[in-house]
Length: 64
Image 1 (cartoon, rainbow, N blue to C red):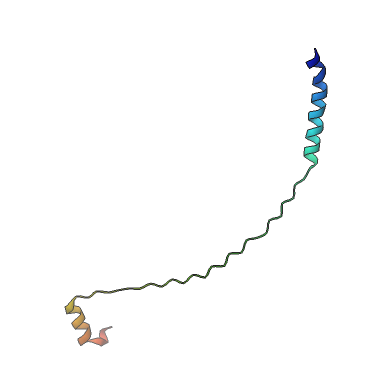
Image 2 (image 1 turned 30 degrees about the vertical axis):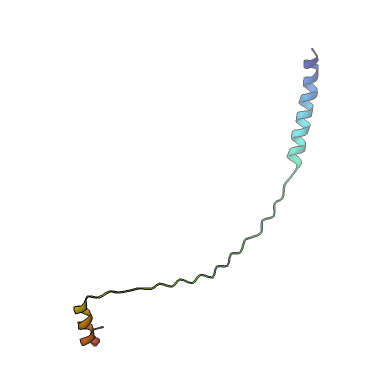
């Protein structure tokens, strides 16, 4: 019988807690993040030519 008598009190407490939680507002301030990247990319290309092609290029430099 004591549990039945406490139910209205528990219900009222739950309603008050819900009302108080609903009245609270949260404010979150978000600042933008600035990222500065200094990137230097260097590419090295190595070409291996056959001796005949190398000789042809040496003999005719105007081709390239």
